[in-house]
Amino acid sequence: MRSKYCLAFISVFLSSAILAQSLPEKSANEAWSYEELIASYKQLDQNYLNASFIDVGPTDAGPDLSLFLIQKEPFNSELSLSELAEGKLVTLINNGIHPGESCGMDASLLFAKEVLETGGPEAGQLIAIIPVYNIGGSLQRRPNTRANQNGPVEQGFRGNASNRDLNRDFIKADALNTFSFWALYQQLRPHIFIDTHTSNGADYPYTISLIASQKDKLAPPLARFLEEEMAPALYKGMAKNWPMIPYVNVFGRTPNDGYAAFMDLPRYASGYTALFHSLGFITEAHMFKPYPDRVAATFEFLNQSLSFAELEESAIKEAFKAAQAWELEADAFPVAWTLDSTDQRKLPFNSYDYSYTKSSLGNYQRLQYDRTKEIALEIDYYPSYRAKAMAAKPKYYVIPQAWRDVILRLQYHNIQMTALDRDTLIQVESTYLKDWEHQTRPYEGHFRTDIKAVKQRNQKRKFFKGDYLVSTDQANSYFLVSVLDPMAADSYISWGFFDIIFQQKEYFSPYVFEDIAIKMLEEDPKLEEEFELWKKQNPKAISNAWATLSFFYQKSEYYEPEHLRYPIASIP
Ligand SMILES: [Zn+2]
Image 1: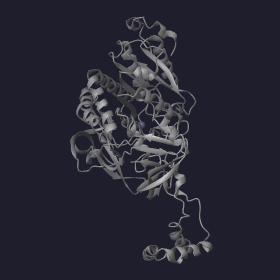
Image 2: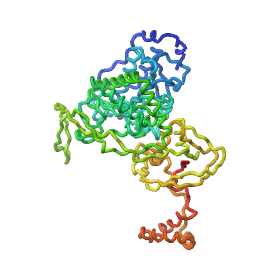
Image 3: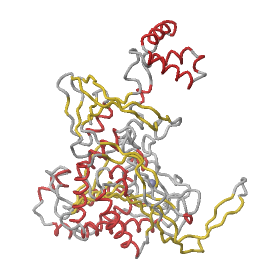
Image 4: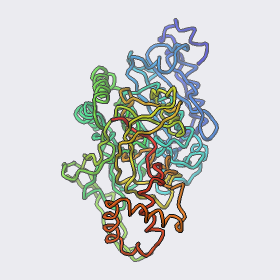
């Protein structure tokens, strides 16, 4: 921010008298480029005292991530982002995470311009817009990155500068963009979060569809508010000009047989923001609709959201506070989910007629929609998910300082940690991995691991000066448990941050260990019983020296307790 804010005494009304700003010229089927968008926001910042353009942090592509802010009164350049957000109803709009889906980038600039030209939002509102999140992908503009999309003539590319899908990166944070997002998000702590997209998949008449952050992952008071108040108001507000439908979550078939709500796990933008009690929305404009219509429908959604925020400011803030209280009081959090197929509802849905005909290319039936025939249906809709894993919230986690990558990510979330001031023996619960499956192909740069079963063991373990004691009696504990509990859908262990513990470090020489095993058997009759049982259960292994001796090694004092032990301990 610059010195113009020293002129804060000048009335905002004076600034709005400045001539309306013209935007870069383009045809209806073109999208503004990254450079044009940034230049336009900078111009708005010049023209309006109640607008502010700032750089917030690095991205993989090189240029800093930018943020554009709008409020009623002139900005004070002395204030930090968190001070600006203090007491305000904050809406954060993210654009261009998939830069080929540019309707939100264009709609947000039009929205910012209109809000400023009409005197700004109501006092008490702070609007924050990320003009372009995936800058690297936006700079890769070309005419053909979206095979089935109806314009614009040039589109950005989905991968960022390091070829990552940033909309899977919100927990693992491989990209610098994500660290910059975390920093701005944690300062703003928005009540409302909107991420703008364009759909793939089925064909249907609606120009825009919506993913509201999956309700069963939200703090219950927030879920209630979303389901009973905000979502219905948004659908109602959109109905007049751009009727909206829940995101059509089907691929390779028609929606006519029904569909389920999208599960936005924490790796996705709105799944991440759900952990911090934002009312999260993903707009999905339909890929086949004319580009200007997609921009207009997204623009209308932003308007509807702002109107609701202005009208319901105190109710939104109340729901947010109730969610924070729930987080502090909860004993356990849901961390993995499965579709609840028993909660089936009827959804009015306008569909296109369709047919299947034999493909002329291969031996299969091809699906074809007939856009001249619209049919009004009532289809089955499944909005609910059940928690398949609840993670108990321990009193403390103990995190050895060696796990720097995880500690850094917690620090970005303002997690308070106390470093031990001396080496200390602590009675803890250790988690041992019992059943898991490593993925054999990389997903977003990681060979993920699905942890299926764990076992807790009570142990006295030595921790060292500088290791961290982390209380869960603090803000952001929902996030903390969602990344540290091994059973969580997007835990750091699932993303490979602890892969090293799957590998045993010390072994034995069979010709020496044979004698030790015999001695162990002689000294422990119980072990003999266990060995007999093991032989019955593993009739083939008995012919294998290594397998047989491993049975004894793993029960001996030589076997390392670190093998398959999750390094982060908890104190219940
Ligand atoms: Zn997208």
